[in-house]
Image (tube, rainbow, N blue to C red; front, side, top):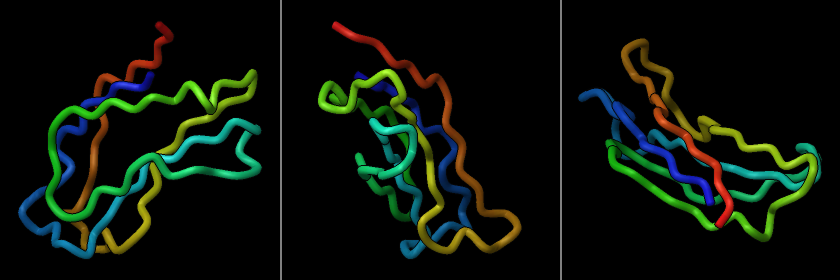
Length: 85
C-alpha cells in the first residue's frame, strides 16, 4: 500500500489544465502504470493498493503531465509511506 499526503498541490494560479500523475513500475522503470492523475487544485490524503506491482525493482514517481509552466505553480508531496499488510 502507498499512502501519501498531497500537500500544497495547488497555489491559486493552478488551473484545471494543470496535472500531476502518480505512476508505478514493477520492472525498474522500463514501463509505467498510472495510479492516479490529479488536475487543478488538489489537496488531501490518498492511498493505493500496489500489491500487483510488488517486485525487487519497483519504482514510484510523480510526473508533471501537463502545463505547470507558470513560475508560481508547484506541487508538493509529503509523508509518502510504503507498507505491506
